[in-house]
Amino acid sequence: MAKTKTTYTGKDVADFVNSYVENEQKKADSFRLIELMQEWTGFEAQMWGPSIIGFGTYHYKYASGHEGDAPIIGFSPRKAAFSLYVYSPTEKSKELLAELGKFKMSKACIYVNKLSDITISALEGICLESLQYINEHYECGCRGEKKV
Image (cartoon, rainbow, N blue to C red; front, top):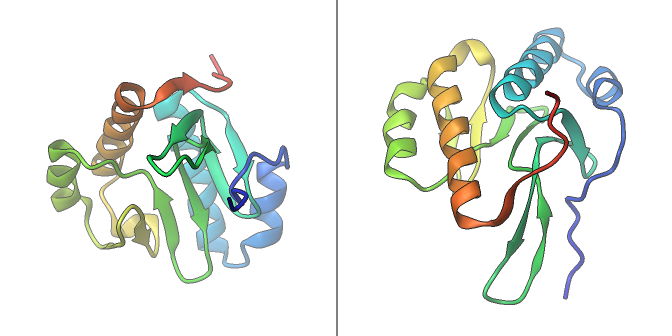
């Protein structure tokens, strides 16, 4: 079975943003997303893999037997757009997407060019809905180092 690439690395989040993100607006948006997601989740930002900033941890196990740990929510400040790992398949999340603003979406990832393209309150709702979904559907969804 393939080894999971997205694992907790222990690397410094601010160092990553400062060295990886070249565009100053994207850098400012990255630090703002870190503040917001820490506030919404109660978890400190942590590096997962080489480029994902995650908040909290949960354990997943698929029917195939593949299992591992992942951040509850997170994002990556990729060159083309932010990849937001915040979506859960609930009716409320679908409703909130209609209020989010300008974005593209794949199966489980929301792509946003800049924070000013979206409605932050809708993003907050999607993040909170995902926290609730993970806690209800996965083993120990509340794990992680709370900043409280």
